[in-house]
Image 1 (tube, rainbow, N blue to C red):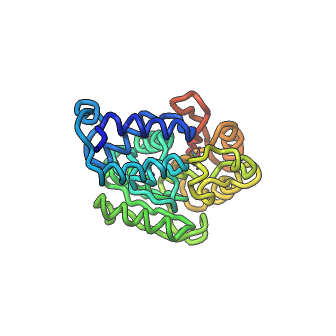
Image 2 (spheres, rainbow, N blue to C red):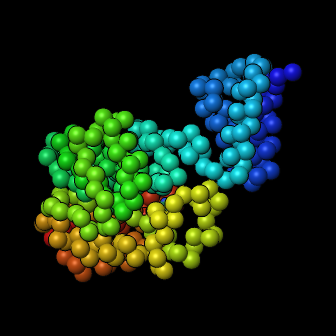
Length: 280
Ligand code: GLN
């Protein structure tokens, strides 16, 4: 006899709770809604509906993957970001809400009607480049990453979202293959200190270390970015970086010594998270 939607959800919630998942109910609903191409509201409203056996089996497989530590976004293949559906694979970091804030700061800095040249370093899924290209109609965006696999995901996103005309993708180890003079440079570089990686949440550990590992103090790539940013910018250009707690003040101080006027911004949780700098 087939299970009802309600019973199936209860079973999945139990499996996820036992696995140590922090939001077992919400994630159980999210996965079933994804499988059935419906909404979580529908699941609640039609909890007494029977779940066909093939769907139940497919659902159990999805729940088992999440229980084993696979992030929801890798299971569904998508993560919402700045009103866009970003396609993700285990080759890219899953876009985070704090990075949406970086996009907001960056997008509102210049007149949206201006023909801007923007560079996104360490683009990963392309989320920042895509969101800026979508929000700034006259922007011409260059998106760089060291990982060819990540660039494949980013290009695929640009085509899906019909933004490919506005973004040039380049394979580049930071500045290696970058050319040009940009009005704005944005980056969410890997910034986690290497020693902290083993202690990260299990789901974060499913993400590529290449996108997380910032070297001994977390700032290895950030230092390389800020040291050479001056060569690719002009007076008035903006540099926007996402970092982690404890890093922005030090990075702002370095930038102030390199011909930039830097300010630290907090994220919505009140944590110092971003550095926004303007070239003098
Ligand atoms: N924000 C990510 C995390 O907390 C880290 C992203 C990065 O290193 N750029 O896991």
